[in-house]
Length: 95
Image (cartoon, rainbow, N blue to C red; front, side, top):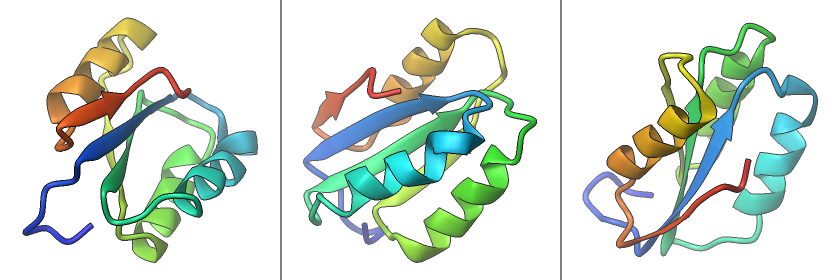
């Protein structure tokens, strides 16, 4: 997504130590969307290499953006995703 445009939809995903499936899952989503979407990942303090995967994918896909959560709980991570979403409509709980 270009920084000067707001997407119509945000696909919000929360992640905590799911490096084993993270890349495959995100690629599946990212390969099916167009410029109307952004994919926002809240990484809730992972320690398993998830953040390195997110950095790599963020360079590859302009529709992907991720932020680091405070490792509180899944509810707070979802609330953070809702606060940070740029889309007019938010698709949640895809984690």
